[in-house]
Length: 365
Ligand code: NAD
Ligand code: IPM
Ligand code: MN
Image (cartoon, rainbow, N blue to C red):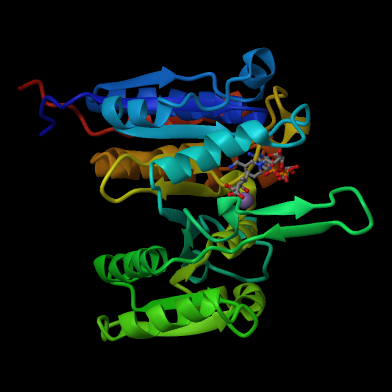
């Protein structure tokens, strides 16, 4: 029975390039699933992105993180990046700003193959390509500490610091183990480059060694990131949960996306387990496809599904995922996946699917 539900409010930042195109479809599907299941969802759009930055200099207003935390249940983002802003100043302020200021320390990037035909590897089944990358999301090389000296001269020095804290490393590794336990998974692989990064990644080694003792039910393995990149291509079936630092997680999640069918299918959640979280496709703004009705909206829609799960609507999330899976199986997809539909037509198909397949609503309450 569907009972009268609490309204959820979502802040939406479509951003730049194809972010705008795919977010429109994610919103379309969200509205359809809410209407079909009797839920109330309010989507409020924010125009943060290159256009706004070029117009009035605004990137992320200083009060935005607190406003999101206070007034919204989650944040949905498209993508940020525009060739007119080569410094990526606005993207760094908005994306990294929200990740850091809202302490979204878990970047969850699932790799799920719906149909063997979208896997670039030979003879791989969905059961064999099914893992999740937990990327540390608040420190590492991303903190922007460092500097340049004698810039533009032959004597230039450029330093970019890699920040790893005990607290930061501990909480992401613990999250990975807890996730494995919660989902009855048996393997967690921590990946680093501790053979070279003998300070920062030595910390990862020690924390991982300590923590695995608390999870005797889980097989804890370690792999250097270069070896892991190779193993993910050769033997994706060996992996269930991967936990790694910010930079390696960024790279491995694009590799993972490729294994499942490309960036057009890869969702992510920037999660603060105790607070508001932010969801976005793994892909960027692909400027050359912007506004052409060709971008694949499935990564954005799957990100919206992750969001539904996090705000406490798991059945609606499952319905949206089922719609995406069916779209892939039935070739109701864009060209990157071999289909012949446009961005909007894929969104229409998904919206129609969730409308037709939603459980009947009860008339009571
Ligand atoms: P990108 O992910 O935007 O695109 C790379 C290629 O992947 C595209 O040329 C396209 O072939 C394919 N692709 C990506 N998403 C697709 C989709 N939905 N449908 C179909 N094909 C898709 O990466 P890039 O070209 O390296 O970066 C473009 C801009 O986006 C840069 O400014 C970059 O900094 C930014 N970026 C932003 C994010 C983010 O907002 N989270 C992520 C990555 C890159
Ligand atoms: C991602 C992107 C971002 C990152 C960029 C645009 C800052 O590549 O979300 O994967 O490196 O985290
Ligand atoms: Mn990336």
